[in-house]
Image (cartoon, rainbow, N blue to C red):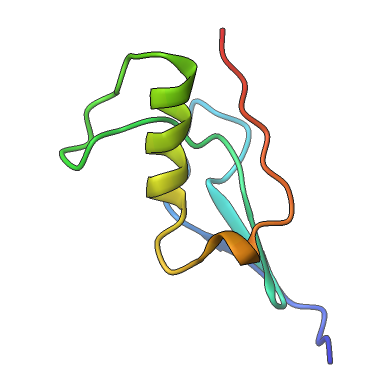
Length: 75
């Protein structure tokens, strides 16, 4: 049953036009996630390495069965 609520999660970067996550009922929408190590330093590597690190950081508390769609972009 949906109650139509949404809440912003995470600290918003004032230089970016989005929040890192929004929870709407039973769904969490992530955006703007980047590859960082456990100390918070950017990871620069292959697309595979960066995607793996980003997915690891975003997946805390979730399993692959919960993911509906993931898109990786690289400049």
